[in-house]
Image 1 (cartoon, rainbow, N blue to C red):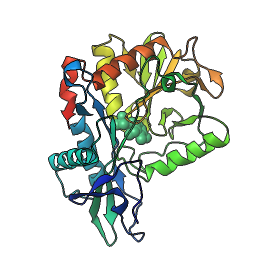
Image 2 (tube, protein in one colour):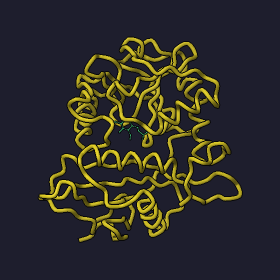
Image 3 (cartoon, rainbow, N blue to C red):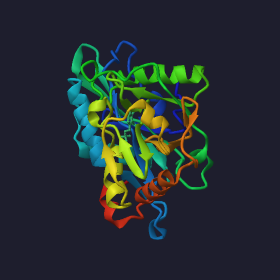
Length: 308
Ligand code: PMP
């Protein structure tokens, strides 16, 4: 029997494009250390080339995927270039001409922990970015989770392994039970770490602050993008430093950044409203510029785009 997967008819598995419903691994396979990536391709917004799709920062994501697998003791039997071709083939097979989310998944095989299945599912998505996009400006009432982000001597935050998302799922379920829209973790030391699937940034007195990699965060591609474009292109200072919980309460603006959620402002934390304006002006400015980078409008960042 064939099952639909977010409407994408085809995915790629172990070397070929196949029907998504036929991409099966045995229930006997161990799953603890499976690793994955979350990557997005955006429609180019340049009038000349409307309809053209570009993958954002393919190289950074492919490198992180290989690194995640290596950290977990697995070897992906394909090069970054082969995985890129696989992704292109899959998007074309589905005939997609709108924004596409790509989530390569690596599964260890039973009895051969170094050997893996490689699956590349894709599906379409709508961006939350845009001044008039209600998805961007909707209220997001977050809480500080009672679950801590795991310390890096327990699980590797740098590896995008499913095991890490058990921690995220517990925090999300707690937030849902308590009627909040999402959760933010403290690290094992009690400093702000990250969201359940995104990094966190705050705006205080016109400056952006964000936790360091040593605060048990994923080395996020979007965070890295922010660390370049916010100071260099928008002229706003960014300090990478430990952030105390109360500093978030006292911030003018707080937003999450990640491939999935893109830039998402938060309206309150632990029921304490943030700042005077929502979404805040600095978040809005960053989000609009980021949308232009993704759409290929900013010439100097076209090298971050890989065409499908
Ligand atoms: N932290 C976590 C836990 C995540 O799952 C993600 C999403 N991959 C991020 C941060 C943001 O990373 P990126 O910008 O590379 O998508």
